Image 1 (cartoon, rainbow, N blue to C red):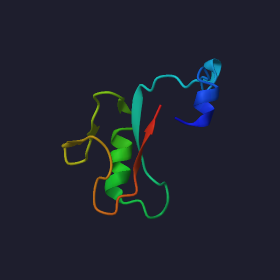
Image 2 (cartoon, one colour):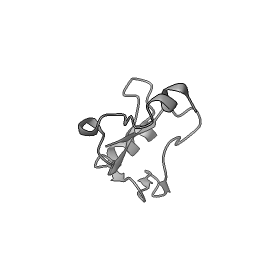
Image 3 (cartoon, rainbow, N blue to C red):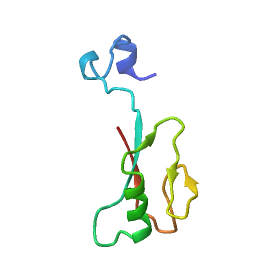
Length: 82
């Protein structure tokens, strides 16, 4: 235990009105630069509405599904939660 926790065990962080809402969607996020490959760009477009946070999988251009990046070797994509 840290000293802060011992001294102030009832601290709630972040404060109540500023706590983030529960996430409901996941989005495939590319780097949005000139080096983004066409494959990842297409994944981003196909899943533009996002997928379910808990059980959703991303649809790939070849018809398969994937839980999230990386889509290929040296993939720079990530997942964005909202």
